[in-house]
Length: 269
Length: 298
Image (cartoon, rainbow over all chains, first blue to last red; front, side, top):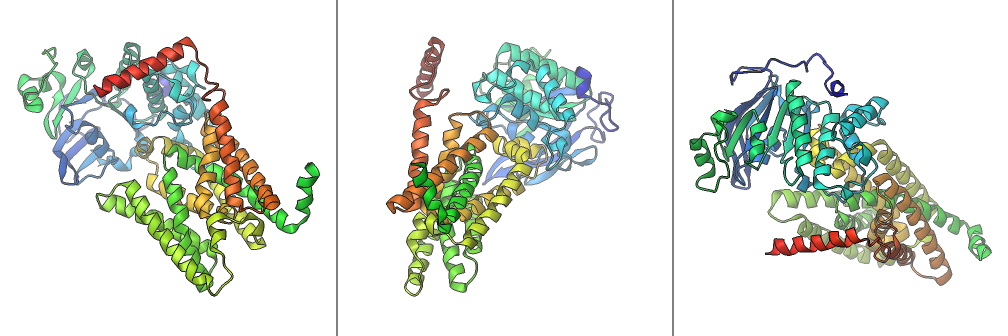
């Protein structure tokens, strides 16, 4: 069942894990001088970084640091005032068919008249093509994705009747059904149960091991942070990016949080 | 009883009205469902009021009034978007400003035309389903065919876009195009419905049948189909009420649709105010929600 999600096609074979954070690596996301401005408010300032394949990358920082904005800007979901984002040496916004994005749960109207099955099938809309119905392959992919997150029994349930954790798992299933190379999740761990958290990290590890890019906005600095291989620490500007242990230095955290209370207690070491 | 209903149908004007009633019932419910799930009910109201000046200008220059109305309707959404994106004015205020300005211009123009022509402002405002011409039936049929075809062909894309615009955009769907397409569908539907219900009440036919269905079913396609059935029944009933009691058809249709909504609101098996299953766990759930509300306020 698991292999179903990662068919080895020419351009998605598991690449060797990149140890170096070199700017010349072609099989990764390279962000250069990204800047986002909303009506005279600078949301992101001159952010340059590399997101490597085959690891789980967390985006952390205080409230209003531009964590969600970074993901949205990278995918072209919000207007960018400067900078460029490349994936395999091509602009990422021209390759959105390789991207699966899961928005914050709070951005969705959960009273929308749709069932769990409707939402998971949305992950197949792009692959199915214009004017066509979903193929049997698409249905199988959607069913397998739903099975993977343990939500098969809820197929015909209205999405509004689910708990927060169940809603999040349905969204993860939708992302899996997209057969993407780059997975972006905005606050997937906000307000969910322990069971869902375990399922989610299990899937993240599996995706990373298959050579996918997993990019996760994470507000919480609790023990969940040990699941991330790499971190991007933001506070409008980039404070640090790279391996978790290097980013979570006391100096970096002080610079990012500037005297705000930090729950984090040095478990990085 | 049945004879009394069938007998008027021997008149050709009644046959034309019947066709219009069915078509309008279908497309209003289908397109209106998109408005409702996107919380854009007010936009439907804005477009419908905005078609009036286009209609008047088309009449003055001898063009097809359907075309004029459609252009004005689409233009109003463009102006609303322009104000919203290029100024700090929010969307609801932009809608209010634009539709009242368009509406005022429309009333003014039609009042001027009325002096020299046999054109009745009331028909545009409140609908006159019994007075539709063969050309109007033909236009409405063409528009209905276009609307239903587009919705069927783009159903999965529009479902994705209206449920999760950001997710759809991130998947590479052309969301601006889908949004504009939806605006065009709404404008077309309103134009096609003008003769039956009029600009002031077309909103009710767009929203009420879909909202009634929303209380009874759980998927968008079911909502559209059941909404269309409710819309058809409401508009045919309205047509007869208009015929027997010599009332404007728009208010009659809307009152029937509103009665259906009231029934669903009270007696829906899953969501009805009077029939909602009140088990222990549910009241516990309600109590918990109340408590969480209080906590947020503190």
